[in-house]
Length: 109
Image (tube, rainbow, N blue to C red; front, top):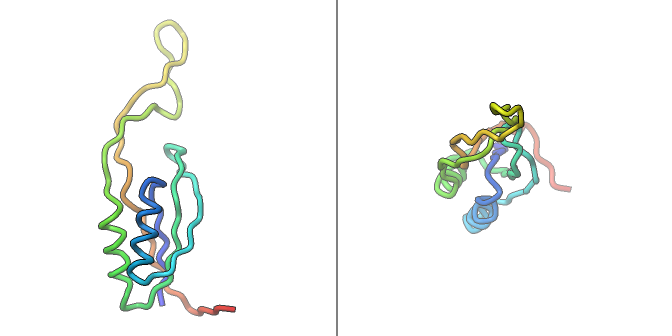
């Protein structure tokens, strides 16, 4: 058995949960916050049998796509007048960060 830990953007989470459940996977949702942009994201825990791991990952890949987004820097820059001004920059957001862990024991009480 495997435990898939998938960190996805909030915008993708509900659609992903619905699709995983449609495919027969059980999902636990945790609200989390990203460290770099300090934006909301969702961490999903999905327990799967070994032979279903790739199927679950392919659902995540299909739903969670990366895209570019312009955002302000987390720490503002000082401009020529000595005031702080947020500095816009482009980053890749979305997609998913996936960890696959081997489960030694599973119990449902």
